[in-house]
Length: 490
Ligand SMILES: *[C@@H]1O[C@H](CO)[C@@H](O)[C@H](O)[C@H]1NC(C)=O
Ligand SMILES: *[C@@H]1O[C@H](CO)[C@@H](O)[C@H](O)[C@H]1NC(C)=O
Ligand SMILES: *[C@@H]1O[C@H](CO)[C@@H](O)[C@H](O)[C@H]1NC(C)=O
Ligand SMILES: *[C@@H]1O[C@H](CO)[C@@H](O)[C@H](O)[C@H]1NC(C)=O
Ligand SMILES: *[C@@H]1O[C@H](CO)[C@@H](O)[C@H](O)[C@H]1NC(C)=O
Image 1 (cartoon, protein in one colour):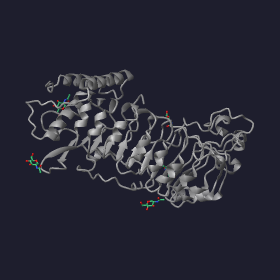
Image 2: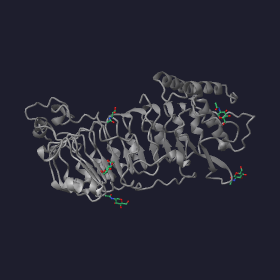
Image 3: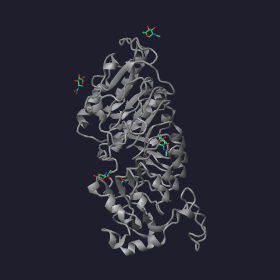
Image 4: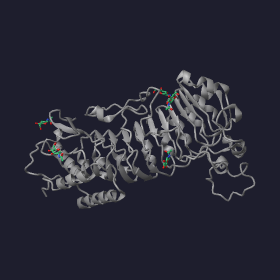
Protein backbone atom coordinates (compact mmCIF):
# COMPACT_ATOMS: atom_id res chain seq x y z
CA UNK A 1 0.00 0.00 0.00
CA UNK A 2 1.64 3.16 -1.15
CA UNK A 3 1.72 4.91 2.14
CA UNK A 4 4.81 6.81 1.36
CA UNK A 5 3.57 10.37 1.55
CA UNK A 6 3.43 10.16 5.27
CA UNK A 7 0.76 11.06 7.56
CA UNK A 8 3.28 10.03 10.19
CA UNK A 9 5.13 13.20 9.36
CA UNK A 10 2.47 15.12 11.19
CA UNK A 11 2.92 12.86 14.13
CA UNK A 12 6.65 13.31 14.01
CA UNK A 13 6.35 17.06 14.01
CA UNK A 14 3.89 17.09 16.84
CA UNK A 15 6.07 14.85 18.91
CA UNK A 16 9.15 16.79 18.20
CA UNK A 17 7.42 19.88 19.48
CA UNK A 18 6.33 18.03 22.55
CA UNK A 19 9.60 16.35 23.27
CA UNK A 20 12.28 18.40 21.72
CA UNK A 21 13.52 19.49 25.10
CA UNK A 22 12.94 16.11 26.60
CA UNK A 23 15.92 13.89 26.28
CA UNK A 24 14.74 10.68 27.84
CA UNK A 25 11.72 8.56 27.26
CA UNK A 26 9.50 7.52 30.06
CA UNK A 27 9.12 3.81 30.51
CA UNK A 28 5.61 4.20 29.27
CA UNK A 29 6.79 5.73 26.02
CA UNK A 30 9.45 3.11 25.61
CA UNK A 31 6.85 0.42 26.08
CA UNK A 32 4.58 2.07 23.54
CA UNK A 33 7.39 2.12 21.00
CA UNK A 34 8.20 -1.50 21.67
CA UNK A 35 4.54 -2.36 21.10
CA UNK A 36 4.66 -0.61 17.76
CA UNK A 37 7.68 -2.68 16.88
CA UNK A 38 5.83 -5.86 17.73
CA UNK A 39 2.96 -4.76 15.59
CA UNK A 40 5.35 -4.08 12.74
CA UNK A 41 6.79 -7.55 13.13
CA UNK A 42 3.36 -9.16 13.15
CA UNK A 43 2.23 -7.33 10.07
CA UNK A 44 5.21 -8.56 8.16
CA UNK A 45 5.04 -12.15 9.20
CA UNK A 46 8.23 -13.66 7.94
CA UNK A 47 8.59 -11.50 4.90
CA UNK A 48 9.60 -8.02 4.18
CA UNK A 49 8.14 -6.64 1.01
CA UNK A 50 9.57 -3.97 -1.12
CA UNK A 51 6.73 -1.69 -2.03
CA UNK A 52 7.12 -0.37 -5.49
CA UNK A 53 5.74 3.08 -5.55
CA UNK A 54 5.29 4.08 -9.13
CA UNK A 55 5.83 7.69 -8.29
CA UNK A 56 9.31 6.89 -7.20
CA UNK A 57 11.50 5.78 -10.01
CA UNK A 58 14.64 4.15 -8.87
CA UNK A 59 16.20 1.93 -11.46
CA UNK A 60 18.93 0.56 -9.23
CA UNK A 61 17.36 -2.26 -7.23
CA UNK A 62 19.86 -1.81 -4.41
CA UNK A 63 18.84 1.77 -3.92
CA UNK A 64 15.21 0.84 -4.23
CA UNK A 65 15.61 -1.60 -1.37
CA UNK A 66 17.50 1.00 0.62
CA UNK A 67 14.72 3.48 -0.03
CA UNK A 68 12.24 1.04 1.40
CA UNK A 69 14.42 0.41 4.42
CA UNK A 70 15.07 4.06 5.20
CA UNK A 71 11.46 5.02 4.86
CA UNK A 72 10.40 2.17 7.10
CA UNK A 73 12.93 3.43 9.62
CA UNK A 74 11.65 6.96 9.32
CA UNK A 75 8.12 5.77 9.84
CA UNK A 76 9.23 3.84 12.91
CA UNK A 77 10.43 7.01 14.56
CA UNK A 78 8.32 8.41 17.29
CA UNK A 79 10.38 11.49 17.83
CA UNK A 80 12.98 13.25 15.73
CA UNK A 81 13.67 16.44 17.64
CA UNK A 82 16.58 17.56 15.49
CA UNK A 83 14.75 16.86 12.24
CA UNK A 84 17.49 14.42 11.35
CA UNK A 85 15.32 12.62 8.84
CA UNK A 86 13.75 15.83 7.57
CA UNK A 87 15.39 15.46 4.17
CA UNK A 88 14.65 11.77 3.84
CA UNK A 89 12.24 12.45 1.02
CA UNK A 90 12.34 11.70 -2.66
CA UNK A 91 14.14 9.02 -4.59
CA UNK A 92 17.74 10.04 -4.05
CA UNK A 93 18.55 8.10 -0.91
CA UNK A 94 22.21 8.93 -1.32
CA UNK A 95 21.45 12.53 -0.43
CA UNK A 96 19.68 11.66 2.80
CA UNK A 97 21.15 12.87 6.05
CA UNK A 98 23.47 10.24 7.50
CA UNK A 99 23.53 8.09 4.37
CA UNK A 100 26.70 7.44 2.44
CA UNK A 101 26.73 5.74 -0.94
CA UNK A 102 29.70 4.24 -2.71
CA UNK A 103 30.12 2.19 -5.87
CA UNK A 104 28.87 -1.26 -5.12
CA UNK A 105 31.30 -4.09 -4.67
CA UNK A 106 30.25 -6.15 -7.61
CA UNK A 107 29.50 -3.41 -10.09
CA UNK A 108 31.48 -0.21 -9.88
CA UNK A 109 29.02 1.63 -12.05
CA UNK A 110 26.13 1.39 -9.62
CA UNK A 111 25.83 2.93 -6.18
CA UNK A 112 24.98 1.21 -2.96
CA UNK A 113 24.28 2.51 0.53
CA UNK A 114 27.40 1.66 2.47
CA UNK A 115 26.96 3.55 5.67
CA UNK A 116 24.18 4.88 7.81
CA UNK A 117 25.31 7.14 10.59
CA UNK A 118 22.69 8.43 13.00
CA UNK A 119 24.97 8.79 15.98
CA UNK A 120 23.61 11.25 18.46
CA UNK A 121 20.54 12.12 16.40
CA UNK A 122 18.45 11.73 19.54
CA UNK A 123 15.62 10.07 17.67
CA UNK A 124 13.20 7.77 19.45
CA UNK A 125 11.64 4.79 17.80
CA UNK A 126 12.23 1.19 16.98
CA UNK A 127 14.18 -0.74 14.39
CA UNK A 128 11.81 -2.10 11.74
CA UNK A 129 12.40 -5.36 10.00
CA UNK A 130 13.02 -3.59 6.74
CA UNK A 131 16.35 -2.46 8.09
CA UNK A 132 17.67 -5.77 6.78
CA UNK A 133 17.08 -4.51 3.26
CA UNK A 134 20.19 -2.41 3.64
CA UNK A 135 22.13 -5.34 2.28
CA UNK A 136 25.15 -3.32 1.19
CA UNK A 137 25.60 -1.54 4.46
CA UNK A 138 29.05 -1.91 5.98
CA UNK A 139 28.72 0.59 8.79
CA UNK A 140 25.65 1.08 10.94
CA UNK A 141 26.00 3.69 13.65
CA UNK A 142 22.91 4.34 15.69
CA UNK A 143 24.47 5.27 18.96
CA UNK A 144 23.09 7.77 21.43
CA UNK A 145 19.52 7.66 20.31
CA UNK A 146 16.40 6.38 21.96
CA UNK A 147 15.77 3.20 20.05
CA UNK A 148 13.60 0.83 22.05
CA UNK A 149 12.59 -2.76 21.62
CA UNK A 150 14.79 -5.44 20.10
CA UNK A 151 17.21 -5.82 17.23
CA UNK A 152 15.26 -7.47 14.42
CA UNK A 153 16.23 -10.83 13.06
CA UNK A 154 16.68 -9.34 9.60
CA UNK A 155 19.90 -7.65 10.61
CA UNK A 156 21.51 -10.90 9.58
CA UNK A 157 20.73 -10.01 5.98
CA UNK A 158 23.30 -7.25 6.10
CA UNK A 159 25.85 -9.31 4.30
CA UNK A 160 28.50 -6.60 4.25
CA UNK A 161 28.04 -5.20 7.74
CA UNK A 162 31.35 -4.69 9.40
CA UNK A 163 30.69 -2.21 12.18
CA UNK A 164 27.54 -2.24 14.29
CA UNK A 165 27.13 0.36 16.95
CA UNK A 166 23.77 0.54 18.68
CA UNK A 167 25.21 1.69 21.96
CA UNK A 168 23.47 4.01 24.32
CA UNK A 169 19.90 3.28 23.37
CA UNK A 170 17.10 1.52 25.16
CA UNK A 171 17.24 -1.85 23.49
CA UNK A 172 16.10 -4.75 25.61
CA UNK A 173 15.82 -8.48 25.75
CA UNK A 174 18.29 -11.30 25.59
CA UNK A 175 21.64 -10.90 23.92
CA UNK A 176 20.73 -10.04 20.32
CA UNK A 177 21.58 -13.36 18.70
CA UNK A 178 20.81 -12.14 15.18
CA UNK A 179 23.98 -10.08 15.26
CA UNK A 180 25.94 -13.30 15.56
CA UNK A 181 24.69 -14.25 12.13
CA UNK A 182 25.90 -11.07 10.47
CA UNK A 183 28.60 -12.72 8.42
CA UNK A 184 31.26 -10.02 8.22
CA UNK A 185 30.80 -8.27 11.53
CA UNK A 186 33.97 -7.19 13.24
CA UNK A 187 33.06 -4.36 15.57
CA UNK A 188 30.17 -5.00 17.92
CA UNK A 189 29.11 -2.27 20.26
CA UNK A 190 25.90 -2.76 22.21
CA UNK A 191 26.96 -1.09 25.43
CA UNK A 192 24.65 1.12 27.45
CA UNK A 193 21.42 -0.68 26.67
CA UNK A 194 19.21 -2.96 28.72
CA UNK A 195 20.18 -6.34 27.37
CA UNK A 196 19.95 -9.09 29.94
CA UNK A 197 20.61 -12.76 30.60
CA UNK A 198 23.62 -14.78 29.56
CA UNK A 199 26.31 -13.88 27.07
CA UNK A 200 26.18 -16.62 24.43
CA UNK A 201 29.44 -18.62 24.32
CA UNK A 202 29.29 -18.36 20.55
CA UNK A 203 30.06 -14.65 20.77
CA UNK A 204 33.69 -15.26 21.55
CA UNK A 205 34.08 -17.70 18.69
CA UNK A 206 33.36 -14.99 16.16
CA UNK A 207 36.34 -13.31 14.58
CA UNK A 208 35.45 -9.92 15.99
CA UNK A 209 38.01 -7.28 16.72
CA UNK A 210 36.13 -5.33 19.36
CA UNK A 211 33.35 -6.37 21.71
CA UNK A 212 31.65 -3.81 23.90
CA UNK A 213 28.97 -5.20 26.18
CA UNK A 214 29.42 -2.88 29.11
CA UNK A 215 26.57 -1.27 31.00
CA UNK A 216 23.87 -3.79 30.28
CA UNK A 217 22.33 -6.36 32.56
CA UNK A 218 24.15 -9.48 31.52
CA UNK A 219 24.34 -12.25 34.09
CA UNK A 220 25.34 -15.91 34.27
CA UNK A 221 29.10 -15.68 34.11
CA UNK A 222 31.80 -15.23 31.55
CA UNK A 223 31.72 -18.01 28.95
CA UNK A 224 34.84 -20.16 28.84
CA UNK A 225 35.03 -19.57 25.13
CA UNK A 226 36.50 -16.18 25.92
CA UNK A 227 39.93 -17.74 25.50
CA UNK A 228 39.13 -18.36 21.86
CA UNK A 229 38.40 -14.74 21.20
CA UNK A 230 40.50 -12.90 18.67
CA UNK A 231 39.30 -9.50 19.83
CA UNK A 232 41.73 -6.80 20.78
CA UNK A 233 39.19 -5.16 23.05
CA UNK A 234 36.72 -6.93 25.31
CA UNK A 235 34.74 -4.70 27.61
CA UNK A 236 32.26 -6.38 29.92
CA UNK A 237 32.19 -3.72 32.63
CA UNK A 238 29.11 -2.86 34.66
CA UNK A 239 27.07 -5.94 34.13
CA UNK A 240 26.35 -8.48 36.81
CA UNK A 241 28.04 -11.51 35.34
CA UNK A 242 29.20 -13.16 38.56
CA UNK A 243 31.27 -16.34 38.61
CA UNK A 244 34.98 -16.21 38.04
CA UNK A 245 37.41 -15.24 35.33
CA UNK A 246 37.89 -18.34 33.18
CA UNK A 247 41.40 -19.73 33.15
CA UNK A 248 41.07 -19.96 29.40
CA UNK A 249 41.60 -16.20 29.24
CA UNK A 250 45.29 -16.82 28.74
CA UNK A 251 44.60 -18.32 25.33
CA UNK A 252 43.50 -14.93 24.07
CA UNK A 253 46.99 -13.58 24.59
CA UNK A 254 47.95 -13.11 20.98
CA UNK A 255 45.33 -10.48 20.31
CA UNK A 256 43.89 -9.21 23.56
CA UNK A 257 44.88 -5.63 24.17
CA UNK A 258 42.22 -4.29 26.51
CA UNK A 259 40.61 -6.51 29.06
CA UNK A 260 38.03 -4.60 31.04
CA UNK A 261 35.87 -6.53 33.47
CA UNK A 262 35.05 -3.82 36.00
CA UNK A 263 32.09 -4.17 38.36
CA UNK A 264 30.66 -7.59 37.62
CA UNK A 265 30.44 -9.32 40.99
CA UNK A 266 33.26 -11.61 39.88
CA UNK A 267 34.53 -13.98 42.54
CA UNK A 268 37.39 -16.40 43.00
CA UNK A 269 41.08 -15.89 42.40
CA UNK A 270 42.69 -14.12 39.52
CA UNK A 271 43.67 -17.07 37.31
CA UNK A 272 47.40 -17.55 36.95
CA UNK A 273 46.76 -17.61 33.21
CA UNK A 274 46.02 -13.87 33.32
CA UNK A 275 49.75 -13.43 33.31
CA UNK A 276 49.89 -14.83 29.79
CA UNK A 277 48.26 -11.70 28.41
CA UNK A 278 51.54 -10.32 27.18
CA UNK A 279 49.96 -7.93 24.71
CA UNK A 280 47.43 -6.39 27.07
CA UNK A 281 47.81 -2.68 27.67
CA UNK A 282 44.75 -2.34 29.86
CA UNK A 283 43.90 -4.90 32.50
CA UNK A 284 41.10 -3.78 34.74
CA UNK A 285 39.23 -6.08 37.10
CA UNK A 286 38.34 -3.43 39.66
CA UNK A 287 35.08 -3.33 41.61
CA UNK A 288 34.58 -7.06 41.91
CA UNK A 289 34.82 -9.61 44.71
CA UNK A 290 38.05 -11.25 43.65
CA UNK A 291 40.08 -12.89 46.39
CA UNK A 292 43.44 -14.43 47.12
CA UNK A 293 46.87 -13.10 46.36
CA UNK A 294 48.28 -11.54 43.21
CA UNK A 295 49.50 -14.47 41.12
CA UNK A 296 53.25 -14.37 40.53
CA UNK A 297 52.62 -14.85 36.84
CA UNK A 298 51.41 -11.27 36.50
CA UNK A 299 54.97 -10.28 35.77
CA UNK A 300 54.10 -11.49 32.28
CA UNK A 301 52.01 -8.41 31.65
CA UNK A 302 54.92 -6.73 30.01
CA UNK A 303 52.88 -4.29 27.93
CA UNK A 304 50.36 -3.32 30.53
CA UNK A 305 49.95 0.40 31.08
CA UNK A 306 46.80 0.49 33.19
CA UNK A 307 46.55 -2.18 35.84
CA UNK A 308 43.61 -1.85 38.16
CA UNK A 309 42.97 -4.39 40.89
CA UNK A 310 41.18 -1.97 43.19
CA UNK A 311 37.94 -2.59 45.06
CA UNK A 312 38.26 -6.33 45.49
CA UNK A 313 39.18 -8.46 48.46
CA UNK A 314 42.73 -9.35 47.52
CA UNK A 315 45.13 -10.21 50.32
CA UNK A 316 48.86 -10.78 50.70
CA UNK A 317 51.55 -8.53 49.30
CA UNK A 318 51.94 -6.13 46.43
CA UNK A 319 55.19 -7.45 45.05
CA UNK A 320 57.89 -5.39 43.49
CA UNK A 321 57.68 -7.06 40.10
CA UNK A 322 54.19 -5.71 39.65
CA UNK A 323 55.30 -2.16 40.26
CA UNK A 324 58.25 -2.66 37.95
CA UNK A 325 56.25 -3.80 34.96
CA UNK A 326 58.00 -2.02 32.14
CA UNK A 327 55.09 -0.23 30.48
CA UNK A 328 53.08 0.52 33.61
CA UNK A 329 51.76 4.05 34.08
CA UNK A 330 48.82 3.54 36.42
CA UNK A 331 48.54 0.95 39.12
CA UNK A 332 45.73 0.84 41.63
CA UNK A 333 45.47 -1.71 44.41
CA UNK A 334 43.19 0.44 46.57
CA UNK A 335 40.32 -0.97 48.59
CA UNK A 336 41.66 -4.44 49.15
CA UNK A 337 43.24 -6.20 52.13
CA UNK A 338 46.90 -6.15 51.17
CA UNK A 339 49.12 -6.32 54.22
CA UNK A 340 52.33 -5.21 52.63
CA UNK A 341 53.82 -3.68 49.55
CA UNK A 342 57.27 -3.24 48.14
CA UNK A 343 58.74 0.08 49.16
CA UNK A 344 59.66 0.84 45.59
CA UNK A 345 56.05 0.89 44.45
CA UNK A 346 55.19 4.31 45.72
CA UNK A 347 58.50 5.86 44.74
CA UNK A 348 58.63 4.49 41.21
CA UNK A 349 55.07 5.20 40.38
CA UNK A 350 54.54 8.81 41.22
CA UNK A 351 53.32 11.92 39.52
CA UNK A 352 56.88 13.09 39.07
CA UNK A 353 57.30 10.30 36.58
CA UNK A 354 53.87 10.91 35.09
CA UNK A 355 52.65 7.74 36.73
CA UNK A 356 50.22 6.94 39.46
CA UNK A 357 50.03 4.42 42.24
CA UNK A 358 47.04 4.12 44.52
CA UNK A 359 47.00 1.96 47.61
CA UNK A 360 44.58 3.54 50.05
CA UNK A 361 42.13 1.49 52.09
CA UNK A 362 44.29 -1.60 52.50
CA UNK A 363 45.84 -3.14 55.60
CA UNK A 364 49.24 -1.56 55.30
CA UNK A 365 49.12 -0.11 58.79
CA UNK A 366 50.85 3.12 59.65
CA UNK A 367 53.35 2.69 56.83
CA UNK A 368 50.93 4.22 54.36
CA UNK A 369 48.22 6.86 54.59
CA UNK A 370 44.51 6.19 54.62
CA UNK A 371 44.51 2.54 55.57
CA UNK A 372 41.77 0.39 57.04
CA UNK A 373 41.58 -0.12 60.75
CA UNK A 374 42.98 -3.23 62.39
CA UNK A 375 39.49 -4.33 63.26
CA UNK A 376 38.45 -4.21 59.66
CA UNK A 377 41.54 -6.02 58.49
CA UNK A 378 41.83 -8.84 60.99
CA UNK A 379 38.96 -11.04 59.83
CA UNK A 380 39.74 -10.68 56.15
CA UNK A 381 43.42 -11.27 56.57
CA UNK A 382 42.96 -14.30 58.74
CA UNK A 383 40.56 -15.83 56.26
CA UNK A 384 42.64 -15.15 53.22
CA UNK A 385 42.07 -17.58 50.40
CA UNK A 386 44.88 -19.82 49.24
CA UNK A 387 44.58 -19.78 45.48
CA UNK A 388 46.81 -22.80 45.06
CA UNK A 389 44.08 -24.81 46.71
CA UNK A 390 41.25 -23.63 44.55
CA UNK A 391 40.00 -25.18 41.41
CA UNK A 392 41.04 -23.63 38.13
CA UNK A 393 38.02 -21.48 37.79
CA UNK A 394 38.53 -20.07 41.22
CA UNK A 395 36.00 -22.16 43.03
CA UNK A 396 37.29 -23.38 46.35
CA UNK A 397 38.47 -26.94 46.43
CA UNK A 398 35.88 -29.40 47.73
CA UNK A 399 35.10 -28.48 51.28
CA UNK A 400 38.10 -29.90 53.04
CA UNK A 401 40.85 -27.71 54.29
CA UNK A 402 39.09 -24.48 53.71
CA UNK A 403 36.14 -25.20 55.90
CA UNK A 404 36.84 -28.30 57.90
CA UNK A 405 34.19 -27.69 60.47
CA UNK A 406 31.36 -27.26 58.09
CA UNK A 407 29.71 -30.10 56.40
CA UNK A 408 29.64 -29.74 52.68
CA UNK A 409 26.02 -28.90 52.75
CA UNK A 410 26.46 -26.02 50.45
CA UNK A 411 26.47 -26.83 46.78
CA UNK A 412 29.94 -26.45 45.36
CA UNK A 413 29.76 -22.93 44.07
CA UNK A 414 30.10 -20.91 47.19
CA UNK A 415 32.15 -17.81 46.83
CA UNK A 416 35.17 -17.74 49.04
CA UNK A 417 33.79 -16.06 52.05
CA UNK A 418 36.55 -14.05 53.55
CA UNK A 419 36.22 -10.35 53.66
CA UNK A 420 33.04 -10.14 51.80
CA UNK A 421 30.93 -11.12 54.66
CA UNK A 422 32.96 -9.93 57.52
CA UNK A 423 33.95 -6.44 56.70
CA UNK A 424 30.93 -4.45 55.99
CA UNK A 425 32.41 -1.43 54.39
CA UNK A 426 34.91 -2.44 51.83
CA UNK A 427 34.19 -3.55 48.38
CA UNK A 428 30.89 -1.98 47.78
CA UNK A 429 30.93 -1.56 44.06
CA UNK A 430 28.58 1.27 44.45
CA UNK A 431 30.85 4.09 45.25
CA UNK A 432 33.16 4.99 42.50
CA UNK A 433 35.43 7.75 43.45
CA UNK A 434 38.32 6.78 41.30
CA UNK A 435 36.68 5.12 38.39
CA UNK A 436 34.41 7.18 36.26
CA UNK A 437 33.80 4.06 34.37
CA UNK A 438 33.47 4.88 30.73
CA UNK A 439 31.20 7.75 30.99
CA UNK A 440 33.43 10.44 29.79
CA UNK A 441 36.11 9.13 27.57
CA UNK A 442 38.66 8.11 30.14
CA UNK A 443 41.36 10.63 29.60
CA UNK A 444 43.54 8.11 27.99
CA UNK A 445 46.77 9.43 29.26
CA UNK A 446 48.87 6.77 27.87
CA UNK A 447 48.51 7.45 24.23
CA UNK A 448 45.81 5.07 23.29
CA UNK A 449 47.71 2.05 22.23
CA UNK A 450 46.57 1.98 18.68
CA UNK A 451 44.66 -1.19 18.94
CA UNK A 452 46.76 -4.11 18.03
CA UNK A 453 44.93 -4.79 14.86
CA UNK A 454 43.53 -1.59 13.52
CA UNK A 455 40.22 -2.74 12.25
CA UNK A 456 40.58 -2.23 8.58
CA UNK A 457 37.37 -0.98 7.12
CA UNK A 458 38.15 -3.14 4.20
CA UNK A 459 34.64 -3.45 3.03
CA UNK A 460 33.43 -1.47 0.12
CA UNK A 461 32.76 1.68 1.98
CA UNK A 462 35.10 4.18 3.32
CA UNK A 463 35.91 4.15 6.96
CA UNK A 464 33.63 5.82 9.43
CA UNK A 465 32.35 8.90 7.82
CA UNK A 466 31.51 12.19 9.44
CA UNK A 467 34.54 12.11 11.60
CA UNK A 468 33.23 14.96 13.64
CA UNK A 469 30.29 12.97 14.81
CA UNK A 470 32.35 10.03 15.77
CA UNK A 471 34.12 11.75 18.59
CA UNK A 472 37.33 11.00 20.28
CA UNK A 473 38.65 7.54 20.73
CA UNK A 474 38.33 6.18 24.18
CA UNK A 475 40.61 3.44 25.22
CA UNK A 476 42.39 3.15 21.99
CA UNK A 477 40.47 0.89 19.77
CA UNK A 478 40.39 2.58 16.49
CA UNK A 479 36.78 3.47 16.22
CA UNK A 480 35.01 4.26 19.41
CA UNK A 481 31.48 5.28 19.61
CA UNK A 482 30.82 8.46 21.47
CA UNK A 483 30.63 8.07 25.14
CA UNK A 484 27.09 7.80 26.17
CA UNK A 485 25.62 11.01 27.31
CA UNK A 486 23.87 10.07 30.47
CA UNK A 487 20.22 10.32 29.73
CA UNK A 488 18.15 11.16 32.69
CA UNK A 489 16.55 7.98 33.78
CA UNK A 490 19.54 5.79 33.02
C1 LIG B 1 12.94 19.41 8.51
O1 LIG B 1 13.83 19.40 7.43
C2 LIG B 1 13.19 19.52 6.16
C3 LIG B 1 14.22 19.30 5.08
O2 LIG B 1 15.45 19.88 5.41
C4 LIG B 1 12.51 20.86 6.07
O3 LIG B 1 11.87 21.00 4.83
C5 LIG B 1 11.49 20.94 7.19
O4 LIG B 1 10.89 22.22 7.20
C6 LIG B 1 12.17 20.71 8.52
N1 LIG B 1 11.12 20.61 9.55
C7 LIG B 1 11.23 21.25 10.69
C8 LIG B 1 10.10 21.05 11.66
O5 LIG B 1 12.16 21.98 10.96
C1 LIG C 1 26.59 -2.67 -13.93
O1 LIG C 1 25.41 -1.91 -13.84
C2 LIG C 1 25.07 -1.25 -15.04
C3 LIG C 1 23.90 -0.33 -14.75
O2 LIG C 1 22.87 -1.05 -14.18
C4 LIG C 1 24.78 -2.29 -16.10
O3 LIG C 1 24.45 -1.65 -17.32
C5 LIG C 1 26.01 -3.16 -16.28
O4 LIG C 1 25.70 -4.20 -17.18
C6 LIG C 1 26.44 -3.74 -14.96
N1 LIG C 1 27.69 -4.43 -15.12
C7 LIG C 1 27.87 -5.64 -14.67
C8 LIG C 1 29.24 -6.19 -14.86
O5 LIG C 1 26.99 -6.29 -14.12
C1 LIG D 1 27.99 -1.58 38.73
O1 LIG D 1 27.11 -2.30 37.91
C2 LIG D 1 25.75 -2.16 38.29
C3 LIG D 1 24.94 -3.03 37.38
O2 LIG D 1 25.36 -4.33 37.46
C4 LIG D 1 25.33 -0.71 38.20
O3 LIG D 1 24.01 -0.57 38.64
C5 LIG D 1 26.26 0.15 39.04
O4 LIG D 1 25.95 1.49 38.85
C6 LIG D 1 27.69 -0.10 38.65
N1 LIG D 1 28.59 0.63 39.53
C7 LIG D 1 29.41 1.54 39.07
C8 LIG D 1 30.36 2.13 40.08
O5 LIG D 1 29.45 1.91 37.91
C1 LIG E 1 51.63 -10.26 20.90
O1 LIG E 1 51.37 -9.88 19.57
C2 LIG E 1 52.42 -10.22 18.69
C3 LIG E 1 52.10 -9.60 17.34
O2 LIG E 1 50.85 -10.01 16.91
C4 LIG E 1 52.59 -11.72 18.65
O3 LIG E 1 53.63 -12.07 17.78
C5 LIG E 1 52.91 -12.22 20.05
O4 LIG E 1 52.99 -13.62 20.06
C6 LIG E 1 51.84 -11.76 21.02
N1 LIG E 1 52.22 -12.07 22.37
C7 LIG E 1 51.65 -13.05 23.06
C8 LIG E 1 52.09 -13.17 24.46
O5 LIG E 1 50.83 -13.80 22.57
C1 LIG F 1 47.21 7.69 35.24
O1 LIG F 1 48.08 8.44 36.03
C2 LIG F 1 48.23 9.79 35.63
C3 LIG F 1 49.32 10.43 36.49
O2 LIG F 1 48.96 10.49 37.81
C4 LIG F 1 46.88 10.48 35.78
O3 LIG F 1 46.97 11.81 35.37
C5 LIG F 1 45.87 9.75 34.93
O4 LIG F 1 44.60 10.29 35.11
C6 LIG F 1 45.82 8.28 35.25
N1 LIG F 1 45.00 7.60 34.28
C7 LIG F 1 44.03 6.80 34.63
C8 LIG F 1 43.30 6.16 33.50
O5 LIG F 1 43.73 6.59 35.79
